[in-house]
Image (cartoon, rainbow, N blue to C red; front, side, top):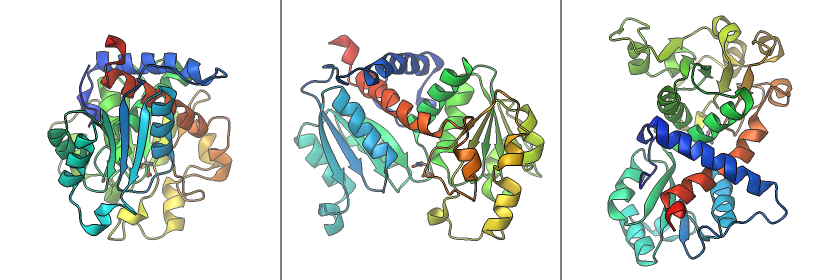
Length: 317
Ligand code: ASP
């Protein structure tokens, strides 16, 4: 097993499948009256959050507690970070306190990689800037496998603000390792140029990557996919206008009832949350039985239990 989980690309197919299989076992704990295993008793997990989060932070906390670890929640607001303490000094403090694993969310891409150089324990990337969010990709893969029975050969459309999405990047890396085909869909301004080029779309077309495709037309893609993953439009990361108006965006790239009905009957709709209801997804779609949004949250706890358990060597003790 690897020591850190920093990127969706850190995992080969065998390790990723081991995490998903372990998560399926962990999910049985959630159905018990006492939702706890002794696996990480005496271990310390620190949640180090420099950016706001609802789902991810609570999910990691629940996961560590269900494995009986001691959990320390650190949020940058209200800490010495506001007095200017550097990430390195914070890391050394955590090290001195004997953290076995540090789960980090940070607005700067690459911060978890730096942390991994300074700490003896394991580092889990819980979202770094616009870069990566590997446990989200794992819980998404888990949800697809649970609903559709397999990952190899699935066709997944990832739709919307791909440019600012760490969820998209980690999903592309993990899903291609696991044999799924990904089509990135969005306005040209929100699809990274290098990805479009790699997929052979646009004037910069170079060596095409057969696993990842790019398409600017949502309606053309919908009838042929098994999964449609809608991304949040991340206005807080936009320092430019990438589309004319919210209305125009919703009209071209929002998933609404008529578009939902154009999907194959077995296809599912995913969203990592938080949603902009009415923009990238309508309430009718978000709350439909085809939507896995609430399941994704529940599966997130099982997947994070599996990650912490395997990184901390739970199976070797
Ligand atoms: N919750 C996800 C993330 O932290 C997705 C989002 O914020 O839109 O990256």
